[in-house]
Length: 343
Image (tube, rainbow, N blue to C red; front, side, top):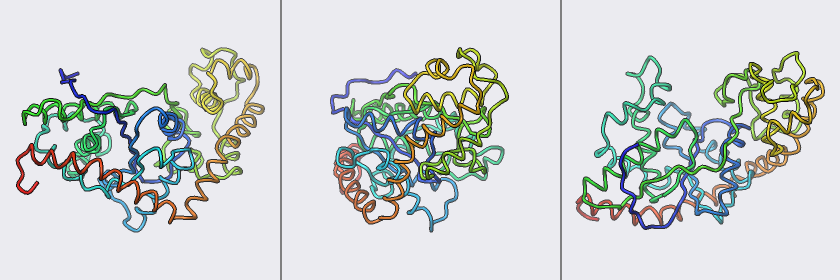
């Protein structure tokens, strides 16, 4: 890790975002969203639907606004309170794009070239990928620094991007002789967010890009659909072990036990103490019942919000105003520091 300045004296603030591209699923909820809900009482939080990030790969313009409403509906249904937190769409606050350009001019090519997510997403056809996909981490840095956020909840796939954000903040502070203007954001660890795997392949993460609907439980799925997907989930012929070590080499069994544990707030050891020696013929119905109990109310609330888009739009409009009231003065200072005319 770089030797970064740490003398920032401003308020603590959390920033996090999700892309509005496809249905949120159980993995998003247990791995990230439930942590958002838990942190909102202890932190000043800024939650952003990052639609600028979404267009780094092709999107249907006719669907994008609806997808933004849908992801916010999922947040609200899961328990995010738009009165306690700032909830908005990234593209509605122009400070994100202007600060991203300024940071692009201080960030270094080598930093961006080291980002493994670009290599993963672009694949073998990197030369045909958008420039936006390549500079995505710098826009992420702008998202965070536009609000002088001090903490960012990150999963394993985002740790490298947060390190680049820290480098961007330090570089700006140093290049423009503005010590500690930007805070050096820290990762926020809210406990080990559950790593939920595909219901059809326990070796792959649950993903909204998987072509099989049976591979995931979407947050919008109704009770019958949730139960059906659990009962059709891939398992194996053996009974569940009594000890966690017995799950080694059994990825589907480990995944289903992990889902039960995450939904019931129990460890895998506790789950196996209850179900060890039982076959999936007994365990899957119990898991389906638990999943319906925990997730169906969220699904219903989400559908209610989606049926009332004006309510979501009101949340987004108020959130954009509140976000701008934070970001605009910070951007004005950035413009003055850089030396732009007409600050």
